[in-house]
Amino acid sequence: MNAEQWTFIVFGIVILVALIFDLGLLSKKSSTISIKKALVQTSFWVGLALLFFGYVWYEDGSTLAISFLSAYLMEWSLSIDNIFVFILIFGFFKVKESNYARVLLIGILMAIVLRAIFITLGVALIERFHWILYIFGAFLVYTGFKMFFVKQDDEYNPAESPVYKFISKRLRITHDNPEEKFWVRHNNKLFFTNLAIVVMMLAVTDVVFALDSIPAVFAISKEPLVVYTSNIFAVLGLRSLFFLLRGAVDKFDYLQQGIAIVLIFIGAKMLVEYFHFNIPIYVSLIVIVACLGGSILYSLYHQKKNLPEDVTDQKV
Image 1 (cartoon, rainbow, N blue to C red):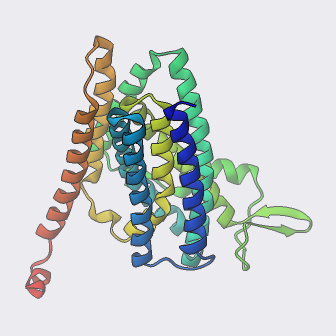
Image 2: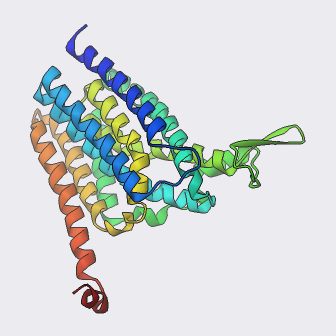
Image 3: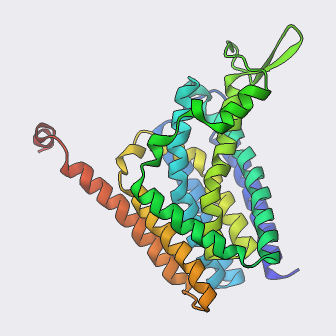
């Protein structure tokens, strides 16, 4: 076996052990997750991704390692948009906070399977039709400009979601679920509960968001190792990131613009390859870190600057 195959094996083992550790030691059924616990879990998944980055650097070289880190940061930042939508979905279906953890876990595991299928199809298409990369690039530039000027969060309404409309038309649904199950039987007929619907919507919604992020990862690297591992690491850390940021996600007012600039840059990078002009991977990493970090810092500065005078006086 070559170095890349060994890296895949190590990745699989690490993810399996990490999931067992996360589920066995850090998670309990029907329990709320505090900010402190969410911080521990988030640090655990981010630290694990950084350790894997170090392993890839040692085993497969700096280029592949930097590609992984760039793709991971891209996926991780785009997942913040997912969190806002997840909050809206939980609120719409009136999911109890004690059920958040297990619903998110099942939804995210389903999302990983769907993303793996989506990535596999993408790899196959690129290998057969290389020109599709330029379509991805144009799509990312368009998406970036749209994201920069449009507040996408305000557009999402779970009741108007095509996913919810599709599910409600084709499945029997009950909103009565005193025992908090995923499905119940009435008159020998199977009915799906709100919890089951939320799981489906989380999984499919994540894949819809992946329509932006996965082409962006392909722009950073076409190596299946980078695409698969960066996506899985980012999605697995999404649950803890949800509990860490759900009360503060609306404070990052300008993060969307930072992500938009990154998408425009990544899309342009993909398009200029047609003219045999290749932008080094470390430049992509610098742009991603600068845009995301700068937009977060500016958001926090803007929030502090706009505090009411009485609040500022109280802090002084």
